[in-house]
Each structure stands twice: as C-alpha cells, then as structure tokens.
Image: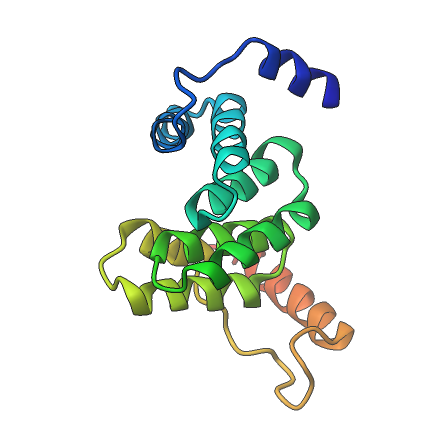
Length: 167
C-alpha cells in the first residue's frame, strides 16, 4: 500500500495547498466514496496545520477505511477528540474507528458522547441504529465477553434461527 500512497501523492490529487480547501475537498471525496483521494487531502491538510482536530480526525478515519488499520487510526482520532471535545463529528469518526477494531463498547460510548453534543446528528443516529440493540447476556453474573456467555449466545441464537415446522 505504501507504493500506491506514493503514486497517489505524486499525482497531486487535491486542488489546493490551503488546509481548509483541502479539508473541504477531502469531505467531498469521502462522500463520493473516493477514499484514497480523501485520505491524501486530509493528510495534506493535517501536515500543513497539525494542530487542527478536524484534519487529524478525518485523516485517522480514512486510514481505517483505506489501510484497514484501526490500530494506527485510533490514537489520531482520540487525540482529535481531546483537542476539540465539542465537535460531534469527531466522536462519530472515533466511533467508526473503534467499530473497525471491533470494540463495540467504546464505539457506542463515542457515539453517545457525540449525541450529547449534537442530539440531531443524523450520522451518529444512523451509526447507533446500524449497531443495533444488544440483548442482555444469558448469564448476567458473568461479563458479556466471557466465553461461556459467548458460546451460550451462539447456541441460543442458532436454535432460534431453525425453521419451525409448519402444520
């Protein structure tokens, strides 16, 4: 992937060297699902203005989408949230990165924190809906992550999915 990244960066994908314009371009590319171009725009914006939390957060999100590397992206998104705790989109990006890492609990908490800032944020609401509501574990005296709860849940749900005989 490093070679592809160099090729893309050499092609000078973004239209500007002004960080705000690069950021806007990155948002457009992200919405158009041109994640490579978005990644490069956010990276360039971040390199020009490293203290800006939005640039850092979206750069981290795109790293997760392009490189599938949540481990690399989580610190970037966490740092962005620390820099600007009043921006709901940063919590949304952090939650998405946590989901990529399969950490549903942290993702849920990030989405909820984002909604506490902006209760009408459609993206946060949609992310929570996609996560779904989890039922209580079968053995409530054990942690949800316990292998017994995990296996019992799998067995329980496989039994529920079986077709019922039609009479």
